[in-house]
Length: 360
Ligand SMILES: O=P(O)(O)OC[C@H]1O[C@](O)(COP(=O)(O)O)[C@@H](O)[C@@H]1O
Ligand SMILES: [Mg+2]
Ligand SMILES: [Mg+2]
Image 1 (spheres, rainbow, N blue to C red):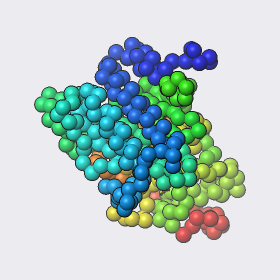
Image 2: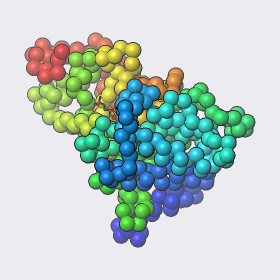
Image 3: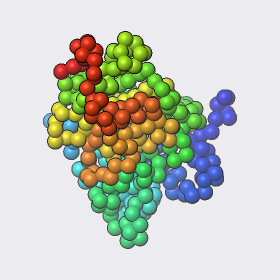
């Protein structure tokens, strides 16, 4: 399609509002501010060592107990500054901050809550591999809107199914914005000269079947039996129970893995495991699992904890972690089936078990 005919993000949002009159202009304004934040972060990421994101000395540690990269801090600041004055928000919550961020009294308040992982996959920055930003938009509870009080943690603890919109920006060879406002999942590519996100992927669909899986295999000795079984069967390939060969990928950047799956299918697993029994998983429910789950399900895929749809989980804490499995529907359903049926949890064939590469 010629560039002149491609809708911009603004045109797409206006068109959505015309087709689905329930969507308000406030939501559009909020999404455009998030997109502007993404453009600023994309610019900082592209400058790399030439940019101004100075290393903290000593290295800062965030509420997750993880070392903060300078770009984590900068991306967080950009999200806060760009969105606090939008007039669309009652409050924000970030993976990088312990408590919710109240909108300053000097700024107008709105009816939405914005939750974000300002820079995802930040362990990849130094090696120049794709990173991204993930965001989730919820409605603030009515009493927050009516009273104008600052939202507290409990106001953010809504299941993923309640999301009004979710998306991510991917800072890769091209900068992309992938978005769902609840009517499918679409992708925009940032035109570097025009500075506009142009609609390039108007109807992303995750194919129901795949021969590609992604998991951090260094954790294999901690996996629970259903995941061990699934991965062993993939590795056994054409000679095993599945009767076909599989390919494996691991980028260690959730945004990049999600994007691959939206482009060509696949299954991603960061399941609950026995590595740190007190921790329910690696990924954060509110900033990672829910927005990714929303995008994947809106594209016809499936997102699960292994035991239940992730979008149905009622959060218990702002920084709650969770096991996550998502992607091509038939594979995710198979993994859920392995979780439901403990008698099937270990492979029956001893020869197959012996051959397993990842058996502890
Ligand atoms: O290093 P691991 O254990 O493979 O974990 C990788 C996972 O951690 C994350 O990087 C977590 O995100 P952050 O960079 O925002 O902390 C995910 O993007 C990715 O899937
Ligand atoms: Mg992350
Ligand atoms: Mg992060």
